[in-house]
Image (spheres, rainbow, N blue to C red):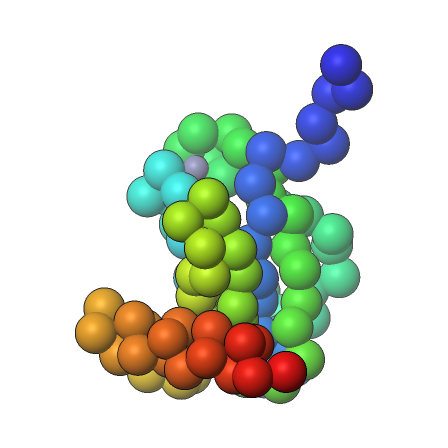
Length: 105
Ligand SMILES: [Zn+2]
């Protein structure tokens, strides 16, 4: 089996990297890595669990992006975004609308 290059992947708002302000990047283990723009590395390392976290930059400042897991459509939070976090109910509604639109196509 091929060795994984990164332990984790995370999405970061492009706007946060352009803002010039430091922001916290949360690891799955609860550890926090502070990102200091300009950020040009491909990944960061969590100081707590030593996972390598690959940074995937999303243009602009979206709060969430659509993703998929074994349960179906999910919303993946975009780190560094200034968008306000959504409640579980709000997320559910967005996913339902998204799935409805998918079926309409
Ligand atoms: Zn960690």
